[in-house]
Image 1 (cartoon, rainbow, N blue to C red):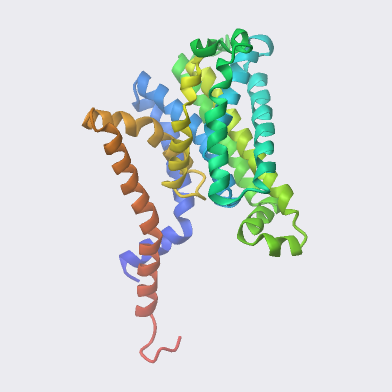
Image 2 (image 1 turned 60 degrees about the vertical axis):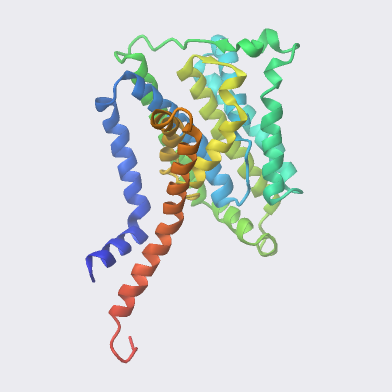
Length: 330
């Protein structure tokens, strides 16, 4: 087998495992090479990556569309930053995940009757509506309205890390736990039922799968991941306002999920990095055409992501034909 054939076979069988190793290696190495602000930005990227992991479960494995995940991040951030001064930040993030899970379950129930792009539109409208909720006059004393809220989580007294390093390693630890948990869930009986419901709901129901339950549960779990991401992001930023979770964030999360492969969990953190770093790079290329440069970059990445499996398949088929005897018999 030629070098191209060996590479194609390796990518087909071990590509995701290799990507996992590369992502872990990058996570361990980056604190030693990135300056303070870049490390802070990477921590934000990891938080967004946690949200994208939940989105991959929902869309890649559940076949449901959400263009409103910024709503889950926003809910998680506000719950965490409001409750943290009273109950402590870890418990506040846990309750943020519960609140986002409940919102996800509600949207999942709506998704039982609304499918496809209509469900995407519904979730997008939810994101548009929720961004206005903290500005309601009755909630301003709690949410701070347009002015937002701030809270600086006190670092553990025993830590010798700087603040950026502390939050980076905290984000890495939470991301690892969430990703491993979602991976185990996908490989479990629930994950198989979810994928069966995605592929053919009628056939899955005939085999005894409660498709309604698994679809709602997928939305709830995806919401919980985004709630954790939002709560963690609130601690990292120390300040949030409704503008921090503009509806365009929902679109960017979805794009970050799509261009990195809808079923590749470790690639979610590459998607998070795209959300944080590519806009800054695009603005450096052209301030007036930054969004055009950003969109063009994402289109190129999407084309590569879509074309790569086809290229690997063509190379593999060509190598298989080369290996057959002249008579066509194996």
